[in-house]
Amino acid sequence: MKLYFDTNIIIDILKYREPFFENSNKIFMLAAEEKIEGIVGTNAITDIYYLIRKQYADTETADYIITRNTKDYSKSPVPAIAPAEFLTL
Image (cartoon, rainbow, N blue to C red; front, top):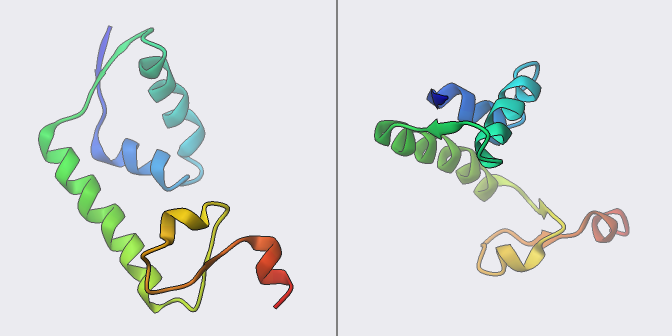
């Protein structure tokens, strides 16, 4: 079976949007496990990039980025710190 994933389904998964995340993710995982064939349109890729990039652009106005992966933000103008470290401030 082949399924086309609309942009809103991918965004539901990437942003953990409730109440949509659980069902969207279950179907997406079927494609990841190769139980079905999942496709995404080329226009969806650019839409997803724009929407997610816009979300991450908001980090530039933050005082800190709270993450377990501080090394991923080593070049960020906003300091990245682990949750435990933040709680000691």
